[in-house]
Length: 138
Image (cartoon, rainbow, N blue to C red):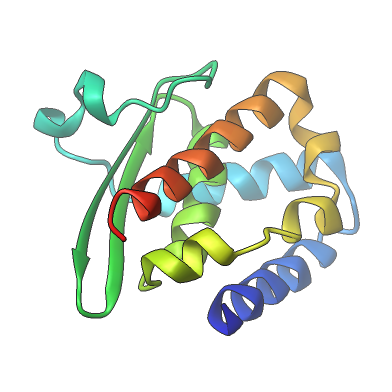
């Protein structure tokens, strides 16, 4: 849990540099999305789709001794950027850490202001999918 909070604080600091600028924030999210390697086509299947997202979003995972390793992709850059933040926060965490986590960075950054209602709902669906994966691996 401490790791999750530390990463969230780093993300908040990164976004503070953007000084609440709408265009810069969206560009930064797209840059983050560009840095995420796309998943292979064979993983872009129905069972890996995150329902509730306006865009198509896929998420896969592996669980090992160090925790989860997540891979994800989306057909839109901003959504992929949002997904990359969650992957960054939850990677190498145990199922319990993910279940017990509280994501405060979204509110702290004011991210919902920048992404609108549709993507905010999608972000909530993405967040829930990580918790579902964690619950199914306890």
